[in-house]
Each structure stands twice: as C-alpha cells, then as structure tokens.
Length: 432
Image (spheres, helix red, strand yellow):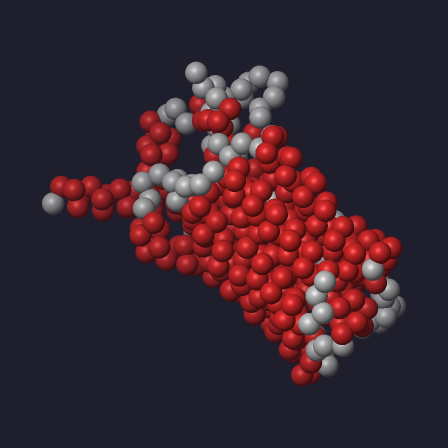
C-alpha cells in the first residue's frame, strides 16, 4: 500500500531535492564555467570575442532545442537510463574540449555535444521529478530544487583553482572525472523519478481531499499537448524566459569575468564575484516560497527590479576604484535571476501541471535556448564593433522589463479560471 510518509520524521522527497541540487551544481557548473575558461581560450588562441562566445550561444541553443525532447523522453523512457546517458555524454564533451585545437572543435564539443548531455541529465528531467514528489508547496520546492543552478557558479571557484593548478585543458579533464564519479552512483542507487517506485505518494497529496481541490487536480491533468500549444499563456512564458534568462542573463554571464578583467581586476577576484553571483542566485531561488504567499506576478516584478539595480551597478564599473559596484551587481543580478527562475517554473506548473508538464517545461527551456543563442554572441559582437559592453548591458535591461510584462500578461494567478473555461469548452463539445 502506498503511503506519503509526510507526518513521519522524514519524507524521501527531500532526498530527491538534494540529488537535484547536486546534479544541477555539477551539470550546469560544466556550462557556466565557460566564462572562466573563456579568457584562457582567448589568451591562447587570440580569436575575436564574438566568434569565441558563439560556442556558448550554440550550447544554449542546442540545449533549448533538446529540452522538450528530454522532457518528453522522461515520461516514456526510464530516467534511470536517460540521466546516466546524459552524464556520460556531457563528460565526453568536456574531455573533447580539453583536446580542442580549432574553434570548430569547441563548437562541436562544447556547442553541440555538451548540451545534449545537459538536457538528458539536467532540469528537463529533474523538474518533472520534483513535481511528481510534491503535490503542494511547489514554489518552495522549485526554488530549492533549482539551488544547484546557483551553486554551479560557486562551483566555478573549483574550475578556477584547477585552471591555476593544472592549466585549462587538464581542468576540463578533472571536471569530467568529478561529473562521472559523483553523479553515476547517485542516480543509479538513490534517485527515484516517481514516488510510486518507492511505494510512496506525493508530499501533500492528502491535502487535495476537498471536492474543489480534487476537481482542480483532475482538470489540471486534462491538458493535451495540442491544447497547451494553443494557449497564449505558454508562449508568453516562453517569451519571458527568452528575454530574461536567454538574452539578458546569458549575455552578462558569458562576459562578466572578461569585463571585470578589462576594468583591471584579477581573474581570481573576477571569479570570486562570479561565485558571489551564484550565492545570491541561490538565495533568490530559495525565496521562491515568496511567490506562494504574495503571488507569482508580484514576485516576478520584484525579481526584475532587483536585477535591474544589479545591472546599473555593473555598467557603472570603469576601473578598480569601486569594487563595491561589482558586489552590488553580483547580489542584485544574482538574486533577481534566481527568484525569476523559481517563479517562472512555479507559474508554469500552476497552469500546465499534468501528464505533459515535462514537455511544457522543456518548451520553456527552448525559449531560454533561443535567447541564449543570441545573448553571448551578441555581447561579444557589440564589444568587437564598439569596444564597449555598455550597449549590450542596456539591451539586457530592456529585455528584463519586457520579460516581466510578458509574465504579468500570462497571469498564472488566473490558472483556475483558465482550467474552468477549458472544462466548459470540453463539456460543450461532448454535449453538442
């Protein structure tokens, strides 16, 4: 007989969250360490910033295209097969980077192969797993579950240390070994995609006993994929992710270390700011519970405002005389980005949770991927053509404002009304 374990001393779903955090830290650490390797690769090969940053753009584009595929596969194939396959593919891509000699080598290994691995063992699989384990408190769970994304920037300190000790090529090898040694045993022996496989029920499922809650729960699972694709709400959420994370965050994150070095700061100091960004992002993600209390849209507005303050501080950096500006940037932009991530996925779950949530969540990441295909390359291109990042960062500010407006129009607060309209439409079709 299935049980929730909710009122006993420990619920296994928290173990799943912990594995999700560790997975996110290592898997996305492989991607976000790009900005740490970026100056090293520029120094060794002397390529232009735009063409070199293009490898990050390709990475995010391929990831965005793969995310809905991975989300769909998670409901059809066994995640215990998918995730180890993704880990191995990602590790092989990093090993390939350590031997790269031409720009196109990086485009293939980091740009194409790595994100395929990332999608198969990252958020497109972890996100629906967390929703399977938790029927309530999803803002909190999505926020904590994404903490690995914030920690992936702190993990960059290890990448910097390995580069200083071993050189950038051996550092890539070392990160690949860590990835395999930690994640393969964790997912083989401890991870469970669904509570059913441990004879458990989702956390809070017994709270869905009222007639309205049961009705809402049933309604939410009636979404078909064509219905989801026909809603303007989905595409507004995709646009929001495209603008905020895709264009703005990935542009800034790809170039922030080189930007700080251009201002005269050492690589170690620049990476420490990068790590502080990760800590702030972690705090923002952990604040996802706020959206359960004050509403998704108000939380989204707050995340955008704080991120804008961070970008204002970043643009003001001109030399090493005011290091506190970089701290304000890291704290503001990091917290805003983390809070945005938790809020957009919680809002998506409000509207679309059910059989196809994994695919809907993956489509959201496609928006991120398409924006990310533009951001890093555009930041490098604007620098190459103007000699400054100012125009790029101002563009990012505009994207953040538009992302918040897009989310407000999508209105997760009206999810119940949307479900009711859909049910009424379905009933009328059946009757007539």
